[in-house]
Image (tube, rainbow, N blue to C red):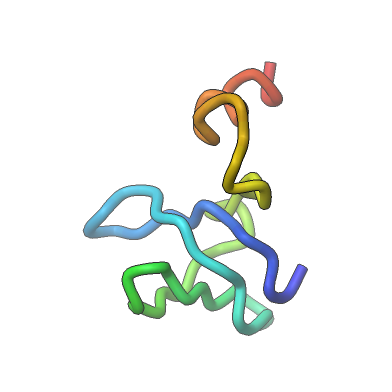
Length: 67
């Protein structure tokens, strides 16, 4: 899970794309791609598509995967 690309819930920006840099007892620390570190909860992060050359937008795929 560490270094995994994820969507993380940020109180100011909604869900942002980043990578897990640390796993703590209360949730992961995520380094966003705009160079901000956020502390999230385990239920506030979702796997992101690793392939940057994907056929559909990542958040569309997440919606389909959850159905």
